[in-house]
Image (tube, rainbow, N blue to C red):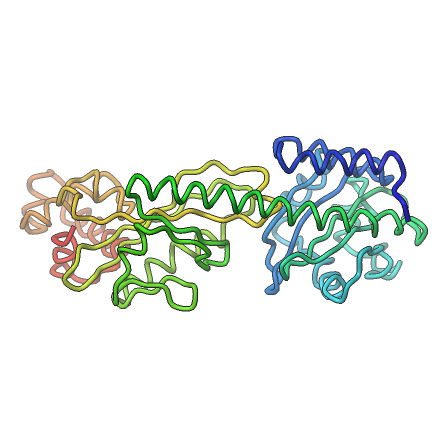
Amino acid sequence: MTLSPAVERAVDLCYEAILLPQTWTGALDHLASALGGNGCNFLAHDRADRVVAFMHSTQMGRWQELWAQNSDWATDLCSPRGAPRVRAGARSLLQSDLFAEDEVRLSRFHREIAGPADCLHWASASFLVDGDAWCMPVFRPLPFTRADTGQFAEVSLHLQRIIRMSRAAVGARDESELMALDRFGRAAMLVDRGGRVSRINRAAEALMSEDFRLRGGRLFAADRQSQDRIDALLHCIRATAPGAFLTAPIALVSRDGLPWLAIDTLPLGRRYEENFTGERVILAISDLTEAKAGTEATLRSIFGLTPAEARLAAALSRGKSLGQAAHDFGVGSVTMRSHLKSIFAKTGTGRQAELVAVLARI
């Protein structure tokens, strides 16, 4: 089936958005309208059924608002039923393929979110890219028919090609960023939202050792507490919603007989094309030989301590007791113990002597 002139023009805008990612939302607006809908979502699920890419047209603002207001009970009803069909090769889907009429009429989701947002019915283009199940449901108040799905199936072929081209473009850009960091002697690696390392530059390779290396494509630290800190950083990456700005804790890695390492996420703004290619994060790795031991700013940066906690930690690293620090700061012992408990939690230590040993290495 050939595309209608309106749909063809809208698809052309999607191709242009590969190089002009700031135009994606407008392109989706045109595509949803050309396919006879009020608006559309565009998203992908990985093999574990996690959302790894997401964007919506501007007309879906009311849907997103209602979803947020009902987040205590709202769940994705479509993906558990639709993703297996996409993986089986379905290039288009109707709501009636997944839900009986009574389900739509009686479900709380349709009554309180989809209906009020004028999104009670949908038809979707669907396809697979690198194992991820993609779909673009287009919504409107009235049902779509089987006759409508021909255009959706044809659009799915173009969208599949667009995503592959976008991923190639983003991959080339990521490679360029890693090499640029390498030229400045900055160790860095690229990880996906699942925590798997996909690229690593030469400066990062030079920091690999028995205590810190890649194992099965994932970061591995021989020290248990260091591994826990790496896992906490990767969990934060996984838990951050696609398109949201990422803030993750610095992971401190101890190495036997070698300077410790600090792993941090580079402060990159979220880019529109990442919503369609599966967001990836550049991790920067710093050798702590150049850190100034015990400085409060360093301790706040590495461990996420508050100013009061960093001041206490710096005092302890200089050999002061908890009582001496409380006297010097004019703070009660109960407050000092509360700060110390928080410092233990943030540094992965459990005793004061262990904490001082960790601080001494920095």
